[in-house]
Image 1: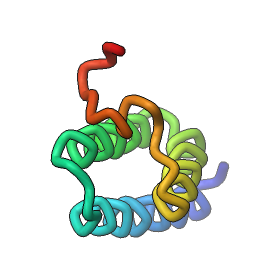
Image 2: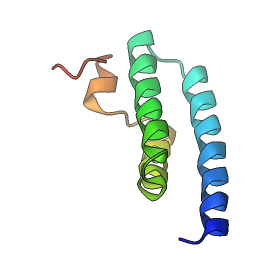
Image 3: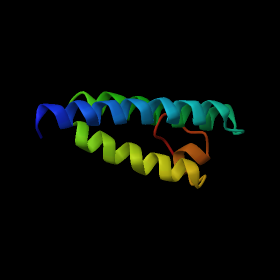
Length: 84
């Protein structure tokens, strides 16, 4: 990926992360679910530092799930520690 396209992708990912955080903040869900979703966003943010393309893919999938209100089983149950 050349420098210009990588900078463009960084801008896109940054804008989408802002949008995702705003959506999570406004969701009418239990606090545990909100925390789990926020942690997923933090993981995606950290991933962007190492693999921008993968982070963009993961963020897009997260946004699809968020828009359709299909949260993972951990988020649905308000779990934030990975236990079942």
